[in-house]
Amino acid sequence: MVEVDYKAKLDEAVLQSDVVKIFADLLTVAVEAGASDIHIEPLENYCRIRIRIDGILQELVQYPKNLHESIISKFKIESGQMRPDEKRVPQDARVSSVTLTNKEIDLRANTFPSVWWECLSMRIVDKSIKVPPLEELGIEGSNKGIIYRHLKYPNGIILCTGPTGSGKTTTLYACLDYVNTTEVNIITYEDPVENKMAGLNQAQIRADIGFSFANGLRWGLRQDPDIMMVWEIRDRETLDMAMESAMTGHLMFSTVHTNSSAETITRVYNLWAKPYMIVGTFNLVMAERLARRVCEHCKIQTSAKDNPKYKFARESFRNFDKEALKKEIISRGINQQQRNDFINNGMVYVGSGKDPKTGDKCPFCEGSGYKGRVGIFEMMDYTDEIKNMLLDGKSAFEVENVALQRGMINLERDGVFKIIKWMTTLDEVYRYVKARFDKD
Image (cartoon, rainbow, N blue to C red; front, side, top):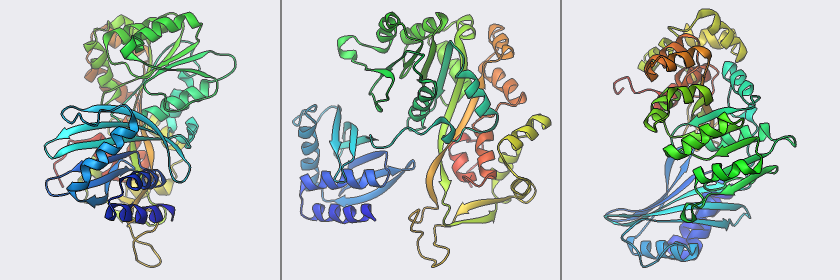
């Protein structure tokens, strides 16, 4: 495999203390392995390089500490945006590069002065990877109907929420691609512009010269837009401008950092949003996580009845309306055998990490039992009932409970459906969506 060859070259470059080759081989190894991040870290007695694949950090190589300062200085010089002699404070840089396999990438880099010298972290944006269509993200069942319905609305706000690395960027781009036609004018304000898409007027935010998200929205209204996207709502001014834009007939897309769609209500209240403004502008709030997929090559069926997480998975449907649950199961294509295997027999699929023919380490997942990721989604549709609750001063907790009783598919429920469909595992879903059980 290509990445194995470059991994050997990286090991050789480390042995030769060749800093130029270390960086070239490292970027190639990371991109070919599908990594999202690179971490170059000094420890007390040695240094290491780790890469994040499918959301999990994996150690790639170790090297002696006397090589570390040269590696960090090399990147600072190449970036042209960091001071090589400044080691006391964090520094940021954005760099474009090309791997040894001729793939164009962008790097968002940051140095951090730890007690053992500087750390260097780099987020990778592989420009060769196309944004997948909306239907390939893992949005299923009633969630699928909700998002497609809201994408046809002429105005209002659609928010995507979740922690860093949860897939918000990809989902927003997929939504924009879906509504991108010659009949509408779409303007985006991004930091940074990660994917250049035909038909969109994309702008790079420059806060240092006053081109902020809020100012961008204010100026963009003069460009006769139909649809606008602001990369993140971070402050009151940006939220106010987004709401004003939605109130004046524009469809708005944005992101916010909260753990669930219901918590977004509390977050916007903290930014001094008034209930009547939320009710008048919010259409849909989506929460998202990325769960690792079970490796198709080495997956095996096993019983989960003794796993405490299985109990919580079954309980997630306790207050679910029976007719709504039946429709949800049918709309997701879950067959009777899959349902009985999980509900009645507690059977799930997991990756063994071993090749079923030879018993050696699985060559597809490298023994992890997982290969690739699938989105887990939660959609809070701002129905008339929810809007009336907000106007009556109900809390986010009360709103969420009513929405769940009405059949809202939250992160937990969506994850459990994907366990039943043999896509992912109990451990993977509950790594993200619950913390209500003791350690196993």
